Length: 360
Image (cartoon, rainbow, N blue to C red; front, side):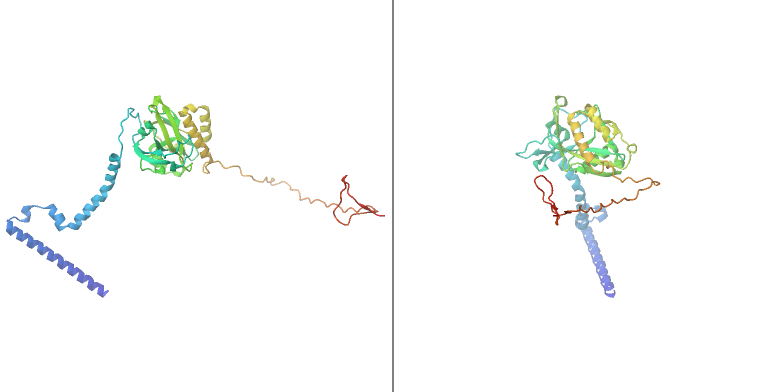
């Protein structure tokens, strides 16, 4: 303790002496400059460059480093937004379409395009470029998206009705869907979709968010000339989002893309798909929803538990019959003059009658 106090006292004394010496040298320098020029420091004004780089080099380096670190995210965003984005002009401007950028993929050499609703191996795709979602549909480029089964506490599925101004499938019913943006994970894509349709409070009541397939499902659809020859080639992730609240507690506000919503049970949705498939745009959407419903019913969090077999119990006042043991058959002695064979084995002749020995 004594040694540490002495060391601290000596250190502080040396530091104080160094500061006095530096101050005196600065005063001498200012006096010499005033005598030579005849201008005092107050008349000359404050020189920021000399102060920062001459008298405070450590502070200057710290400020520059902090500004650089804070500016790096902005520089990265501007670089990926403008420099690495391929600008394309299209003859079909989007009508209430999304202009967000998305990553598109291409097939490796030697691989054919997967079939509709097949689960392909993701190693057959390679990243290609970054384009707008509208351009991906116009050119038929492979991109990612999510189709989401949102279930409330009572296992009702949320259905949304598209606006009549939408270019594809106007006025059709369907599940919640969203394209995956650049630098988004699959879970971030699902969370953003729930945010945009139901608000952040609903996502706080989610108790389960899981992918229904081990890999995205390949969905493809050609919309024809009426829709600008758009082609949908999407690696679709089928998701289950289960809520801890009932449907009445979920507040959904219609917007320019969605005009109505409805909560239905799994059985009601299956019956609706069979009775009026035209309400869901086309056969490709119906097949995708049917495929997702089969996976949804197989999930343990949704599948209804089967009946548990239980033994029938008698009424409380009923009389239970005592256990009756079967009576043993009495020993039958052979008749007089007949002896059984000494061993238990009986020899059978051709007619099937056993051979016995008769006493003489």
